[in-house]
Image (cartoon, rainbow over the protein chains, first blue to last red):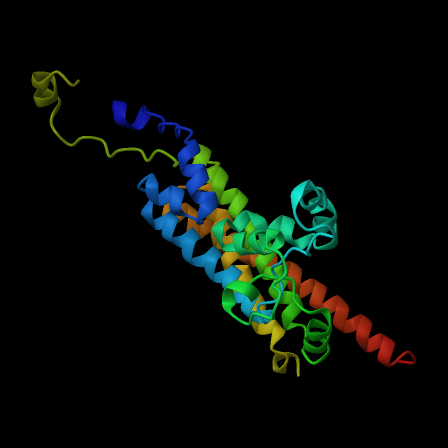
Length: 192
Length: 67
């Protein structure tokens, strides 16, 4: 048996930078490591799933309820209760940058005058009456929508770990074909 | 009747993405990734099918308690 078939696959080196990149944008850490196929698979499938989930929920299912107290430490103190109210965000947060607008909206004070621009409304806590009206007039699609966003976020935790420490199982070494060269030639080359 | 409800068309996509991404985090080789994804896809589809059949039987029984 040649030495190549005995060699075990090299263990994946841990990479904190790749893990952080994969948190920010799913698959970016794998692309940084040169694992392009897996990187693009994660990026397209998870970002696609997260975006589709938001669309199925009429872009009203990724948000953090506003704090009772605006500004200062009170706002940060209200974060656990906001997460208790909207527990789905604990899963959605792990998709990375795509869920950051909700955090931005959480800390952004209410506008003095109604602002319909996307910067003021995207991932901001929706009007309860409008959400209720939308849900009453829909089938189960909005419910599946938030499930999509949470599943995408939770799957990205596995992707982050894959970027940090590599896959759970390393590739199985494939046995090399036995050499067909005559033994005399191998002895000459010092292999046999 | 079942297929007229659009929510069921979204489930295969979720099944495909979950099985592919989960398998890709466990393996590095594409043959192993696709094989594992296929096996997980079959398992999840089977589980969902069993749940669907049980729910269908329960709803049928609730609508027709005498039968």
